[in-house]
Image (cartoon, rainbow, N blue to C red; front, side, top):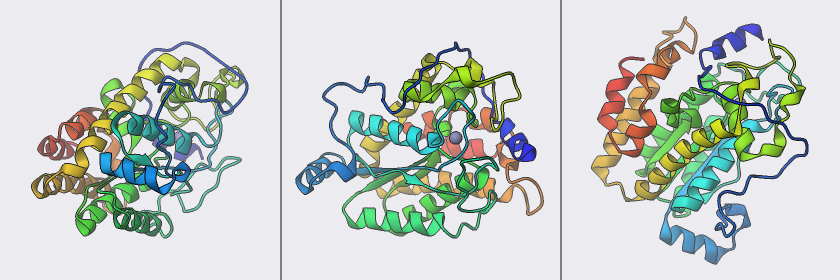
Length: 320
Ligand SMILES: [Zn+2]
């Protein structure tokens, strides 16, 4: 357990924050606007789906799991935050959001955690084929771009998600992006963590009623990896949210119209990234080997991706 957390420590991020706490559960902060369009696929009738697809044929697939996120967070953090970010992007840009998938690769050895596949299972038996079939069905049902956003991100989970996305982009001939949400906000100092400052700040902004910082004692905090969550704030969560949502919205709007050449450049960069992440350990080192320089090397990944500067992404990968 301690080892597992140590591997995640690199992900600790930097910024300032304040304390806040609240009690009851379930209410989303409503700054997405009072008349926000319904973007949840499972709540739509056929006509609304067809209208939404005609306007923007992108579908978001949020991923997460049930996992201990400290005594101060709910166990669904990963899927809940990914789903909320996708919903905001879809409301802004168009597109629809599929129901979040709970369950993936790995999870902490802590209470209230569902571990569906071992932490380092890059040869995923469950998640990979499930994602493949989801992508096939999404394409068959008329979507022209797919954004898989994982809020759960052990190294193997990230590799499986991105590798599947690259392969399905090639197979289906439509862009499929598979990325953890933090990769879109490294330039605002969110490098991904576990129930620490970053994830907790996001939840304080997205679902303020779910976080109770008053339950935290002195560090070390059990099952938390990264900067002290007592420094989390809704304000920091807002900055991270806005950064991620803006990039997702740009991608959702543009991806369905990418021509073959653009798609090829995108695939090339994403394939280089996943190849680097997969091969860096060379069968013996930590699966996290290609993440050591991620804060520096991939700082502008989100910006480059949204601006379609794929060659720059490819160049950055060489520094991982
Ligand atoms: Zn998490």
